[in-house]
Structures are given as C-alpha cells and as structure tokens.
Image (tube, rainbow, N blue to C red; front, top):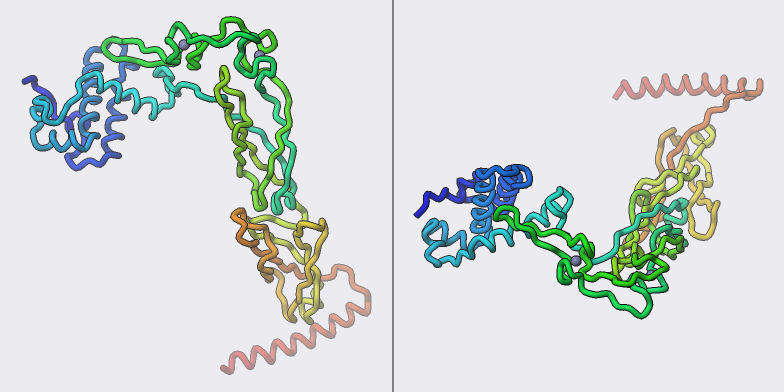
Length: 368
Ligand SMILES: [Zn+2]
Ligand SMILES: [Zn+2]
C-alpha cells in the first residue's frame, strides 16, 4: 500500500475535530492548493486532491468511523464503501459552489433558475411608517416582454434545447484530473436557446420599462428595514421565474418626535412656574387619524428639567401587532428671559424667601 498520509494530518485537525472544524480546515487547504491558484504545479494539485479525499471521508460519519477503526485499509478493502475519485470531485464541486457561490472566479457554476432581484428605496413619513400604508412604488427595470410572453422567441416558435450543453445549462471541463463545471456560455444556464428571436425584445424576453408596484407597508416598519415583494424583480431568462423586489425603507424625520424603535420621544417645554407649582400641559401625540393630535399630561409640582413622563401605549405599533411602545415625554423647564420690573421684583422676593427656606432646610438636614 502507498504511503498515504493520515487524513487528520492532511487537514491539520485533531481526531476529535467537529464537522465545523473539518469544514474550515478543508476550506483552508483547498484554497491554498486550488489548481486555479497554482497553475501547472503538480504538487499543489496532489495536495488539493489529498485534502479533498480526506474531507470526503472525515465529513461522512460512517466513513469516518471505519477510518478511525481500520485506517486507510478499512476504506480500501471496501468495508466503508469508499466511492473513488470521481465522487471526491463531485463532492468538492458541491462544497465549492456553496462556499463561493460562483463569486471567486472558480467558474461560477450556480445555474440561474430565476431573474435577478431588484432594489428600490421608498421614503415614508413617521406616521405612514408607524401605522402602515399602501404606496405605489415606481420600478424602472426590465419587465417580461408581452409579445413573446417572456420566452424571447418569435411568435409561433418554441425555444430549443441548447446544443452546447444539451439542455443541462452547465458544461464540464477537465483541467488536469479536476473537473470544473461552469454555466453554459451559449444559453447562459437556461438550457434552452431561441432560434428565431422575438423582434420586440431581441430575444431577451424582457424590455426595459417603468412600472408601478403596489406595496403594503406594515405598521411599525422602521428606517433601514426592507420589504421583499416576491416575483416583482427582473423576469427570469427564457421564461424562468422572476426575481424578487426589495423595498428599502427610509423614514423622514419628524420635528415633534424622535423615534427609538417602538418608543417615541417628545420634548415638552414647561414654564418654570408650572414646574414649581404643578399644572397641566398638552403633548404632541402620534395618532393614525390626525396629524396634530395631542395628549394631556399632568405636571406635578416640583418637576425638574429632564424629568421623563412615560405614556404607555402611545408609541409606535409593534411590527408583530402586539400593541404599541411608549411615548416618553422629556420635560424642559423654560426660564423667562425678559422680565417686567414687577416680575423682577416678585422674583427677588421669591429668591430671598427660597434662600431662607433653603438655609432652614439645610439646618434640618444636617441635624439628622
Ligand atoms: Zn419578446
Ligand atoms: Zn447551454
């Protein structure tokens, strides 16, 4: 038997390595030795193959058990059912497509089965976002060609199986002994081609057009969130399903409130006399049916600047429909800036009265 390296050693992991550790180790090794990065390097290719084989065995519970008990011999004698090299690479393909989603230049073997997603932004005001609304969203993007029903073929013709990939949508190329699968360049993965293209859309199945999509924004939606509208994206190539439309939400600022999740924060200006003596005030409220609703709040005597009154159930509705957050009213005590001579006189009297009181209070406090 050849001097095969221990699988755990190949992947530099312990015998107790978890699935996740194995995966990470394999990914690291495979990236390092991938033939695309090591053109014509036979040693790298061998290492790549070795890592793939080790991963295939160790990631399979049954095979790993056999390997742990009997080593390489256990697998070669057929006891564990080692499936051979072909399977190693089939397996590797799966893992690679999953790891890179065709984005790292290994051939992009993700077959497009649907159209691309679209993204638009929609601005709502605070009340619309809080209580929900319906809006027509304008989407400027390809739409299915009505003349050919999205097939891209001239009226009366049918798409045919692509001769280059025989309808599979993918082609495999051997590079050394490694098989690479990539999207068919002729049909771009659709598996079908159009012999006589539709004149309206030049065989694309879609034409660029502005269209309106009615979107329902649920109560409680917030800036930075996005809604998915299924099936309102770009039509798929040659009649495959369309992608989705994603609507990204922007919420305008409101001068009366700041929003903090499901809570609203409002500032309430209270004259310093009210703050000292107590009183009533009206605070702005967010209500679905009125743009300038208010709520009465009692100001207790001795209210300080920065005091917060929490009005439960007067905030923003929760997205899950379970009630509303709170309206937090932050008090700002206003001190008069222009005083009449009499007001000044009264305040001076008040001042000496309060100082006397403070001194006696201090005395009382230090006595305890
Ligand atoms: Zn057409
Ligand atoms: Zn093809």
